[in-house]
Image 1 (tube, rainbow, N blue to C red):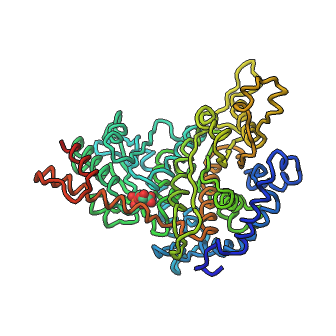
Image 2 (cartoon, rainbow, N blue to C red):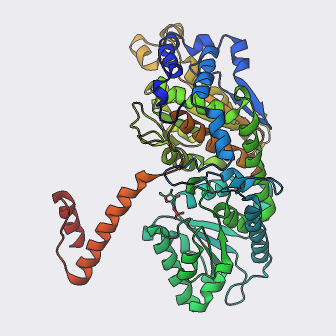
Image 3 (cartoon, rainbow, N blue to C red):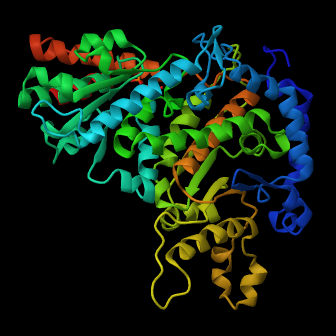
Length: 552
Ligand code: F6P
């Protein structure tokens, strides 16, 4: 496909459009009778099992999706990403988060330079620094050990690290290595978030890590100034050197802020914010909390999936299959949302992280060459861990709107509990729901079944489940640092695959700019009103009224 061609103009897209009518005549209840189909729709890689037999799809559908992938030059696009080509064309940048977790001897080029040695230089620096802090050879201004870390950052400089931190907290190895330490995240510019994060912390024992790719993000910089003040008012301005470090691509601004560039950890413009958890953005705070060896395992898990995506035939390629099926659900079956439903409390921050990875990447209205899309790209992601979600929004998923679901289960619990006298463990109880929900959605319950159960006639309609609601199931062997890395990379690549098929730029985010510049205008007005009592001007009636009330 020439890059200026809309994917929706291709024969392969049109064939899939026509194929929707065939699929609408099927029901998952019937499709699931065919064990051979189900077997073909199960894929295993490096301990992870994907079952997509509960998709509203036949093997013919999958074949047609592979043809669409060919029409979209998916293989070539993945190759161009790994080759460091400037596939983020609107920002003229490579997209190389895969290099962040590549092995030391790998060669990955950007602009004619192998970037892997630079990556490992920073990783080695993080290892050394985190070991010094953790062992107490780097101490605070009053000589006390730094046991607590506050990572300041927002968006991609926050959500990925928070997800990994939350997932690791109850992993036995990670919880052992983080004993006596705390990691907190300050993201929102809301002063309440500042208050919540510093409550109970002592500046003498706290290390602040300012994380910002640009080092210009308004929220992060204000929070950084606020915590700089918190430290210097308690310990004196010179204490900042011992209590504040930074992660950024902009080392000039780091120095200007007053952080010693020797205490700055670099990353590069070829790392997108939402794809940056494997850079110093995540690796530094997480290594301070859990130790570098644990985080190295996380990077290895992500790297295993990177190699899988790059080399595995599409028929057995987990992120490619997931990406293609998402395109099928969104663009052909017309389901705009997706629920992310991990049956593990440790994955409670997966959905918020994927919201950014997916929606900031694929929430676009034009093709990569600026042509308005005649179809909707992107999807609405949301989710909660099971079983909590079951007692909340699952009603809508079972009997209201059709929302394709990702069910994520884990074979071995991080924290198993076996009660005396009970054969079914607490984890078995959780997993019973993981196994039951996809079938409840797929099969539903018919009026005939209800009548056989003697349900009163006036309740039959209310108790009917139409079924035929699609899901995928991912089963992980356990949830250690390695598996968490695998899961992260599966989602990152799935999102990229979707963007490659839709032929959009999944790596820019111009949509966040307008709100930021309007906020700058309001900030200027507030400044002028506070300092010079200047009247409100330049805003519409509605905003003027609200601002007037606020300033009173
Ligand atoms: O929300 C927009 C955004 O640019 C994200 O893409 C990014 O992750 C976040 O802001 C934070 O940016 P920075 O790391 O430069 O502070």
